Image (cartoon, rainbow, N blue to C red; front, side, top):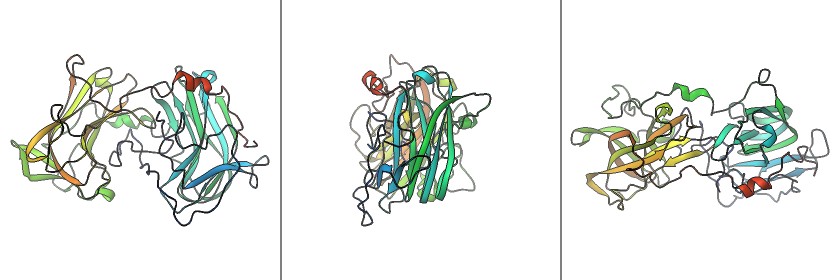
Length: 410
């Protein structure tokens, strides 16, 4: 069962940077370690997980680029500390130290995770992280992404503060490191605090979504920029530093007079999207369908996309693999074919991303995008990563009510 990542991520591909979504990519886990790997090992930590994906463990971590354990040579208050150490030169890999507890005693309260961190030559960032989960989505999350620890630092006290809703089921927490270097963690504490005296440190799940419009803009692609080749007004196109001019209006291609946008990638591992983000207010509790007509000569992956962030991951997400009336996509450079994503908008949704995503080395043309509310009795939701329970009853029952070994002495 996939769990949510404590790293800032773009869950549907690196092109989906958005205000309500995280603001930097999650690197993929790497393969075999390179020649810099050393024979480094530490004793295991009691109560802490060294796994990379299981139960509450965040997905996407690299096990081959790091070692985790108890360091008896370095400590803050006792005889040892927890540590995360890179063992390769992979600057994009990351690893988290994780513990999970039931949320029973913290429901309806504000919780603060504090702890001391010490770093040596950390090339990207390190920090504490805390996640509050309800049964079907993440309610609150902060990984110090807005205030990361970098370089070489002495023992310093840091904190993460989040609100725990009345229906929360679990808290997951720990420390993380991305890139090279080493991080030590010691003397952690989880406590309830007075909301009137201690502010929440909610990260990218904060109020930025309030800047989004209530309805899509330039949905018919009729508005064109007069100054920027790549600019499609009202739409996002990912980072220009990564994609260059891969997404452009193509005046040589139209769909019965309707304008078309070209999405073109020369990379086999492409994750490029033409998308925009709106507030979920008008669509709460409804089934929505985003559709677009697509033309391509290639047999590729991708299609119309709808995504609703639910925390550190996308709780509702759908990218059809270019289907045409339920049949397998047959590429035809002369025929426009319909691609549609249909999802239900949950009651807790704050924002919705909609657009078209390309996941292959190819060129596609997109025309006539639209968004509408549909009747659930007449239009089925498309198959995909729909909302699911993050935890089973058995998993929750296995978690302790209180954290253990926060001083890393065992």
